[in-house]
Image (cartoon, rainbow, N blue to C red):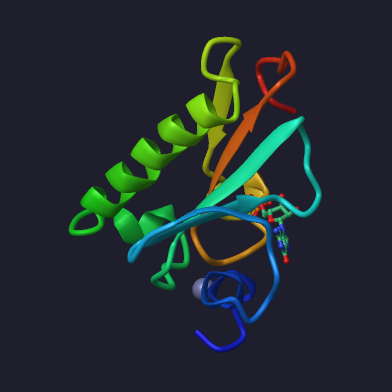
Length: 114
Ligand code: 5GP
Ligand code: ZN
């Protein structure tokens, strides 16, 4: 999608600090990090929200989870603990309509989230 920030990050049109990419997935540091480790994992494909991943996109969601686990290990938060967050729509605070998984770690996180 031409006016989507994360499509542009995936294509390289917008600069980002990428930590992983393959033919399906891109991962990069969040520009406004909320924890010492804050990485976003996105599909290259423009998928607006989790609601669009209920059937044939389940494998892609699995790939995103796998990469999150790998990145948690690589960034030293696997043992200390980390959180995966996937905000869906307004009440959850989804601000970019291209599905993205947050990997947060490196500090204790409260529960429940605010
Ligand atoms: P949401 O609130 O939609 O779940 O998360 C969107 C995230 O994208 C936010 O944490 C925000 O800081 C991050 N973000 C927004 N624009 C950019 C950008 O251009 N580059 C990067 N790296 N992160 C961005
Ligand atoms: Zn997009």
